[in-house]
Image (cartoon, rainbow, N blue to C red; front, side):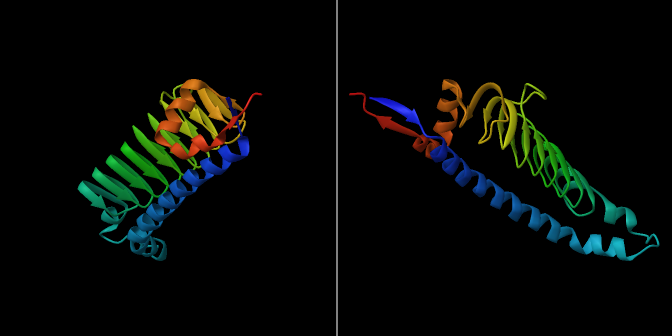
Length: 189
């Protein structure tokens, strides 16, 4: 009895995880934008520079939830956020970085690009081959451990419908058990 890999089952299981991550990312982004919407609207409506313009655009402190640019231990900004935990609408830089566009951090979650030890991204997740991370998950990935549902999967250990490296399969199926459904048992008679 051997196990055969079924690409369609893999894609279905992968997409279920991918949709959950996408919904979580989308809800987070909406929350961030809602927090900063008032300040953004006031900025774009006024052409003159009000006295509190600096506080509207650049905010600093331990816990910062304001401004287009936020910098602090926990920073949530409309545009750019830098901090230990950084959540930015467009870009974020931090140990834990969540950004609508690009993210850089140990754990990075980005809409279009993410660089980090663990990089989760909508389009591009970069690992050690290009940037120095360990794991890349997305449609077009490049990392030491890469999980992708397309042919554009680069890395030392890859798990995709087109390439199943033993170490990558073992690692990803441990943390995402639904991916095991891509393997079906066949009887050799």
